[in-house]
Image 1 (cartoon, rainbow, N blue to C red):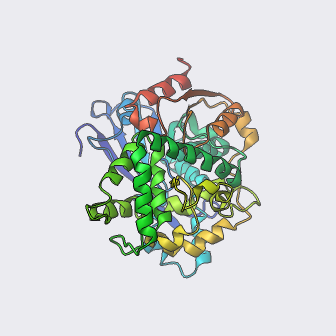
Image 2: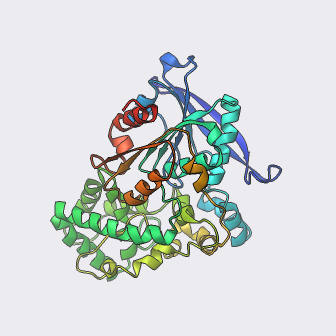
Image 3: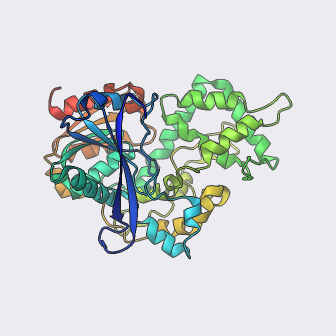
Length: 421
């Protein structure tokens, strides 16, 4: 145990479908964290809602994000592994192969969206806190979950803090990805402005992949389209450097791709630890009768500058394309189920626009002006339509500002929610 933290592990049994409490169940894991000097104090609870989808909560260590130390000054924190992640009945490639057919797998996966996560959180809150409400901190997708929480169970909340995660309440998947591709394009061009030689280097690597069969250590073929998904990192504060130094060791003196490069690319693009990120990415925008229909793939046709043979090769970002379920080993067991989810036409609503307009729970949100992942305009539109909301817009940090700021972003959010600034 890290002496900087007093921790208690919790496991809860939750229905797969909260509308059918007598049906199949899941185990939901959460870790309680407190300052050892205050472990016996009656501190308020702060539920951390991780970004994703498909991301598990951070594990306390000497390298824990600065926001955790900031939160522990005043709160007891609950690090929730959202259903399907970490130790909460994880959804893995191996688990997917146990389903007898794609329809049953798709039906199972449909219970891993924000509405189910909120129902899990309420079950946990009642067990830990009784009827006492708690506060939340939502990073990225955790902010989407927060708005669903305020829509479905605001009585369980005393204050909410959101970092880079106010969703468009009525935005469809088509709306989102029409905006996403231009932001990614601009971000890649900014990266090339910082590292001009990398544009030529990436083109060399892509040409090598296009003319030969290059295999990753797990046997998957590395294609140009998979190479381009490295752009997912560019929206983080250190993203430019992460991609730059990866490319720095990409080719040996003979012009061949190095083992070091191939191993790192396999890990960065393989979804081994979080297949739900790919499987559920577009279901976040499924509401009502309109299918998401592989919106990112369809939107790409409107942006010819993303052609694979373009002289300036553009990387892609937080977009999931159908080909990924063919090319990537970890995702193959989900191929048909993911297509069924993309064609689904009866998604339950995630946000109650009327209830949010009348919201009285203090909501403080930071919107990152240049966020590559979450559209700032949609976020600000949402903020104008949710009661008791205070917004801070900044370009000082990228999407990972909550972590990168060493606690300053969370401190400012808490001051905003409490009306101190």
